[in-house]
Image (cartoon, rainbow, N blue to C red; front, side, top):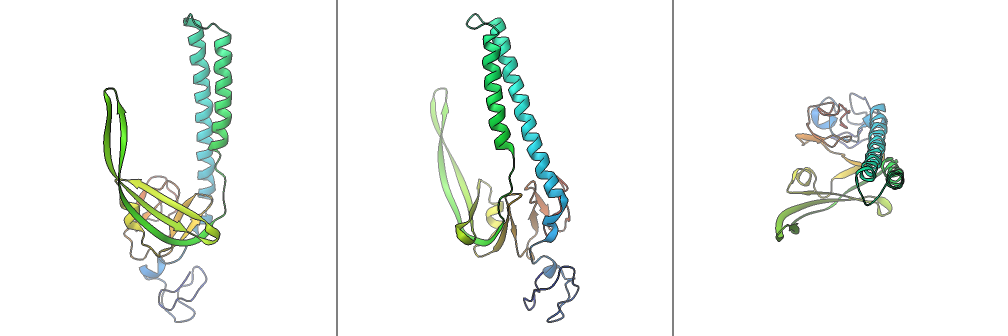
Length: 218
């Protein structure tokens, strides 16, 4: 942890700065620095559970595909069983293998960097409808982060400027490779904090996420 008064580095849990004597009980100092709560076992368990849910969903969908082809072969005149069920089973197995691989959350290297750019752009998308096409306007908000060795990360939202307003160019941040989320170094002037597990918005006074109960990194 770093002192908000003189910038000196101190051990976590220190009550007073060893350099200038400033108390760390003040709200501002408490919310400056990268949290050591990232090492809480909750996060590894959370990531493991998310991976398991994705794999179970993939298996369930493959079973539904197989059953759908079985019914198609049973009631349709175009294809009979067991040909239909074998095709369904083959598609289901391939899909399950691909989805299982994509559903596995792998940890990547963490890195420290800063906010390098913010963009607010008006966009337009073309939407196909029964009688033709129509155009829909929206605002795209993008925050760009950069770290050492060319590491980059972007957060983009549509018609929602909450993340866009949360960060300022020059803010020091840390990318957590296990969660694939960003933590801001200085939270002393913030009224909200994002959960690094489920990304939900919390009041800065909360210690745990109101949605998933993850420790908030502050």
